Amino acid sequence: MQPTGDNPTPHRRRPRYRGTHPRRFDERYKELRPEQFPQMQQHIREQGRTPAGSHVPIMVAEVMDCLSPQPGETIVDCTVGYGGHAGEFLRRIGPTGKLIGLDVDAGQVARTRDRLAALGGRVSLHHMNFAGVAKALRLEGLADCDAIFADLGVSSMQIDDPARGFSYKHDGPLDMRMDPRTKRTAADLLAEMSFEELAAALEELSDEPEARLIAEAIVRQRERRPIRGTRELSEIVLAATGVRKPAPGSLHPAARTFQALRILVNDELGRLRELLRVAPFCLRAGGRIAILTFHSGEERLVEQAFRAGVESGVYAATNEDVIRPAPQEVHDNPRSSAAKLRWARRE
Ligand SMILES: C[S@@+](CC[C@H](N)C(=O)[O-])C[C@H]1O[C@@H](n2cnc3c(N)ncnc32)[C@H](O)[C@@H]1O
Image 1 (tube, rainbow, N blue to C red):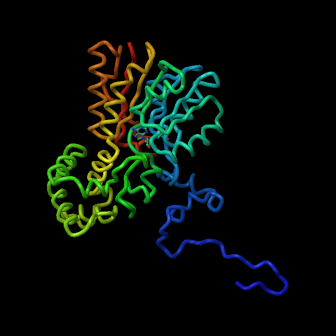
Image 2: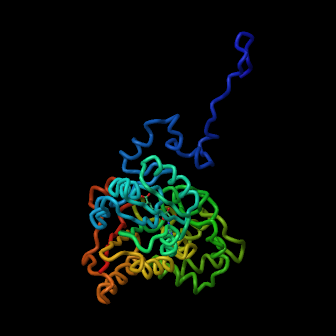
Image 3: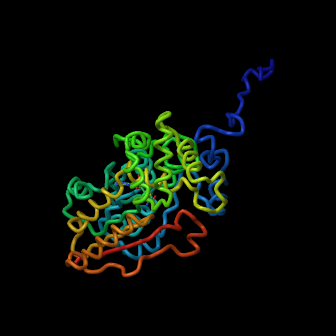
């Protein structure tokens, strides 16, 4: 609009969506602009969805029951993420306690540092893989801690951001690195792995029943041109499995392929094995560890490590039966549906 004679300040148009299919992450979600849409976050939570740019912590009450954080204690949150569990730890350990938080995602660490600082208390965050938990304690000048917690996998912020390439739901680069220092992206792995390696990964890391069909389709496609985008990969899987349009409410046919690739890119099982190996050395006598898992591969590793620890006398106790989220939590936050919680207590 042109300035008029009696209004010297030109009227500026409000920035808008470009058309009906916004391309940028922050254009896509109204809840990312609370100044414009103040009620949106609350509205989305009431619908049982997770507002973009945030993460709803899972099984908080159950985690607190297992770890029982006490005033003055030192807790290591190995996957600090958005800081949901960490905030509750802080509340319970009080000003004399200490929270050490780790995350491989540098952006996450920076944002969560600000968020937790607002809660007060002694907080120290490290951009670090939890396989290095013993090093984190050394950096803090500590020999051990009272409790260790890990909430495995990716956060909602990571899944929802198309630029990270974790989800078949949005088009983006096939990246999937939680830590930008990781050398190979998902696109690199798709280009390099042999047919047999791909099929084995799909079978072992995500129980994909059509592993060989999908691996075959990937190999065929990459002979024509490199596979670089999430939508492209999703379409390859849909074509290979013969599904044109996934039925509403059913698992998307590409979900398992994306999960297997993400686990590979971030060496998730290798890092978890290392955490489980060193954790007993990082806990004081009577110290507790709790781990939230989201798929059978990691669940098996945690169960085996805790049971073996009880048998060898490293741990005094572990849970017989896995702890699952309450039906109400699954209803309120469907992303909690696959969660399984296990704990162990140091001898
Ligand atoms: C499910 S989210 C944690 C959410 C957090 N509990 C909360 O309440 O906000 C998992 C986080 O762990 C991080 N992560 C995954 N694997 C990791 C690893 N091996 N070491 C450190 N952080 C890791 C991810 O970057 C992500 O931020």
